Image (cartoon, rainbow, N blue to C red; front, side):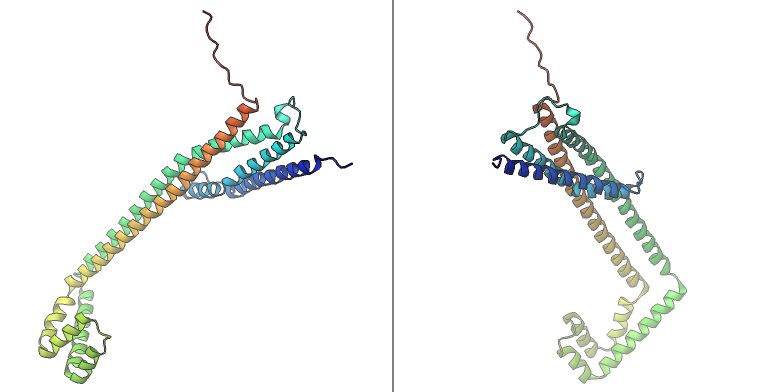
Length: 277
């Protein structure tokens, strides 16, 4: 005769095995990520925290499967004896592990936020330092004789190109009517066509040392602002994503661990006796 409890027993055992494998696999992943350890290195701490928090839900799923298996086995009448010692019961160790994981994720929450803050400040400092050096280099080049010669060569080249274009009305009209020239440049070409002497004034205004220096400084400051905003946004995302996930995992594991230990009688919560009247 086939035992009617056999399917339930098989299902319970399967859930317990799968849950145990998930937990063991997560612990092995943590050990692999931990090696080689470099506890004093901030980037290592941030990478380690992010990886174990990202996979932190796996042990919780494993715990759920283990206790689901024990629930099925208990309902089928095949539960383990109630007088079994806690140190020999996998449920006890599962709940202890859950409590320890909760404590770990709770400690990682402020640690990761502080690391993100320090990392952001360090990167912002590096961005500021590089931008200041670039600005200083540009400012010092304004009075450089070689740079002045290069600017004069560029002015001569631009004047020659514009003068040749203005001297050829057909080529100038084709360039304006083609639509490939922006409206602002087309207006300038029309102006140069009517007044060729304006070319010298335009080149002197747009290609002198001060104008080129200010243009380069504006580009450096724009890049600096863009990098600062990108760094702040990346740090904010990392802090929120990993930090909040770590905090939620901490609450979940601690609730499972302490509630389970108390309900199964592994932790005795004494009540204060009322004083005799």
